[in-house]
Length: 177
Image (tube, rainbow, N blue to C red; front, side, top):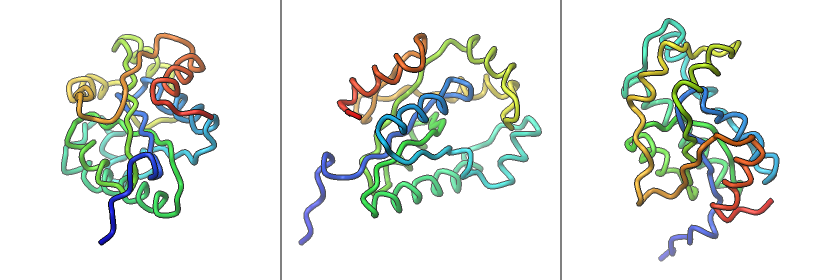
């Protein structure tokens, strides 16, 4: 009988989560660079229908998100099967979404980025080339369910420089470059 692998021995998927505009990409790219782990944007896993829907200002529902979350989970599993730890962005706003991601064949850890909604709205106003309109921001904050005490992860405020935020995250998670 095969014994389950201890979390410390399994590859890790570090998911940087939160509403659009909170700083997921910046944070994830810095962490991936420091750890030398591959980086992926969850937005790249959306089917075209989801992108079209959001671009037109319509919020996604759980049915829209299901194939997207499954694709992310499966990518994490493929990387982990190769022994590779990863860093990726994903809004992962609801516990049920995170439950799907935790089904991956890796130790899935979450970093919930916390920011004032007004700061995030200001960032979205100045962001170019992204399909997520500012008009959908309130729906994301409404859907956001904080990490529960039984979820593997940390919640971190982004009220410092990106480098300071990343240093704090790595320290809290016990990850060393």
